[in-house]
Length: 133
Image 1 (cartoon, helix red, strand yellow):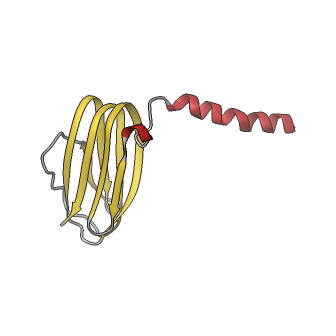
Image 2 (image 1 turned 30 degrees about the vertical axis):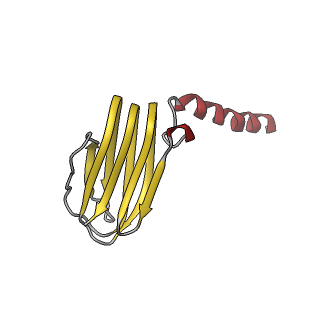
């Protein structure tokens, strides 16, 4: 019985590692920078990403429900998506991050917001700032 238990525990990490693929957006070679300032701004920057597939999730404290999204990306391949939900779980934004141009999503409930950045075989540089208004 012990042999089966140990085998099952050691097999799980191998399966998880085999299924990951790609790179981690927060790996040091990509010079990642995350700034999470309550009631002010949330920003994410990473440079020279190469074939990154990753999902990064953050909580951001927002007292006002109105924000502006400031993207600045240079994409050579793949895509990078952004999903934002307000404190009530209402979807505020869900889409790809454009190279530039401010986005003004609908207002949401103040409190702890969920911010997710999804990389799919992404190659390029991302600079994204969410700013409370």
